Length: 426
Ligand SMILES: Cc1ncc(COP(=O)(O)O)c(C=O)c1O
Image (cartoon, rainbow, N blue to C red; front, side, top):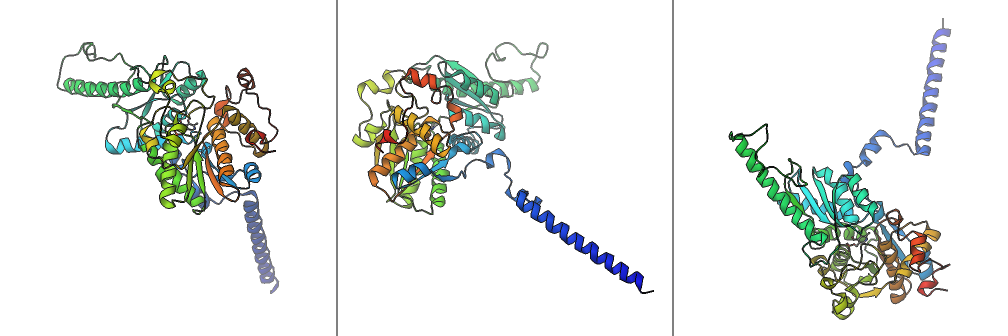
């Protein structure tokens, strides 16, 4: 009978049609719901946390661009996994130290910092089999010590003294690295003696060899990260941030502006961009209390009252964090600058609120100051130019001070601007 093959052929055709429709529907669903195919997902995935650092987006800050007539672009460093621009620096410092043999796997990276660098070092250290020992002044916000501890650092809080004092937190951090090295060396020798059959009592050696320190027995020595003087910091930006900005703008930019703490960012980026095109103008924006503005504009680093060795860091110089300094660091020395602007705390506070309201950008104090700098540059070079700056970290790190209404009101800094009138715009 001819009917059966006809039925079979019909059934096959119907099944084929159903399959085609199903495949079409699934692929439509995938593309609409943006579920990537397995192949694409694998191709796009990062090899661990370290691989996710850098290559941050460069965004047009619409409100400032529209107001100034310049293209003002912000590099979103707050999107790094450790939450700031310092992730790049932490990776570079650790990788260079491991390569040079100054740091071993299982070693302790020490740093004197209450800020983002310590958080970044502690965040990336486990990927290299290392640990962090962070020394901070005991007047630093308690959340900072808590955050570092939760991330896995050993945190040592010391009283705030001048940088010239041996117990300044940076000097203590340097000393702890040396002590960790001595400790590891001693321990290695002890283990050697033990394996050669030296007598032990209940598994312990005499007290001379035991440690009362903060280091664990398996400590493989220490390395002082030294973000201010270690040029790995500069190289992180010269090899990373600078080239990314160049590529993201197709080399079509007129100016770069940033504030400086260690100086690593401004030095690395300015040097890279000016080597690519000497016509790109690079500027510093300097917060109150910092001596760098004078250095860049007049060649004089500081006045007597500002000398780093003469006073403690005065927390009331500026409410911005991580920027401003009264000494020239090796990193800052690498910068190629065409000029500098001064920014005030009020401008930074108003800018932060303005960007939050108009662009939805929730930024920290140094990023806000950088945006003040971008507007100052726009006013100085005129409309029609492209200006790049750095959005260093998010406002989330600044809830107890810079983004705290009570704190701001005590300092008479409650934001009141409705637009950009604090920078001279009607
Ligand atoms: C949040 C934040 N922004 C900006 C800076 C300044 O960057 P640099 O040290 O590269 O000058 C720092 C430095 O610690 C920082 O912590």
